[in-house]
Length: 300
Figure (cartoon, rainbow, N blue to C red):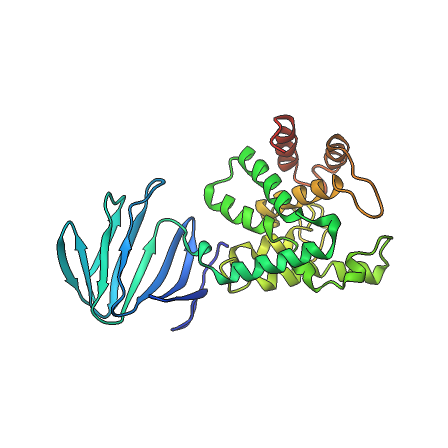
């Protein structure tokens, strides 16, 4: 999420403790991650060659002593020293002589694969979809449709990364909606619909101060509409991020083409016709055109 962030000493977005030490995520964006890596005395780790493209890894020694062995040469590094690697061809051994703390900057995101927050939220998402058999797999389908639309719009990689995560988790706030409301096979009452309308706010609050905080606005605003008729904030036009506008279309398209207790599924053509009818008022016209192109090319 674009903006300016401040955290106090000792705070981090997320911290993962491992047998050999710990990793604390301080900041991330555009695929770059800034971390604190702690390595326990007596453990050995390695910088490994990258298998799939450019990778820069930078380390600044904050505390302790660490020995780096490269091509048989060992160099001892202390606080204030630093080292970095770019497209390694052979592993480099790292062996701390005491508990060592490093400032670690990586040009490629890796924390997503270690994040306990994501594991917890994925479990919650699974429970959301298990609440209602009619929406099983909805998050993944919205993610895939959003991906196709984003590619058509030539969305930059930094936007695409958060789009896919935001699309996947867009409905996570429904975990707080009572089953009898979420599964109701008939028309909702006004009170019940107000309960449903809380899920974007609940979901966006759930990802605050986690690895997924960049998706806050996507989750909160995926039911906003260009003309201000959406919820929860009633914002309009370009005040709604492009990622949120994409998920709004992808979410609606998947809902229309999925069977519900109270109606049959629409065909792709019927759903597209309905969405095109609302293009420029409810939905972003460029996003709708990208959806149509994706359907024509068999990407959706």
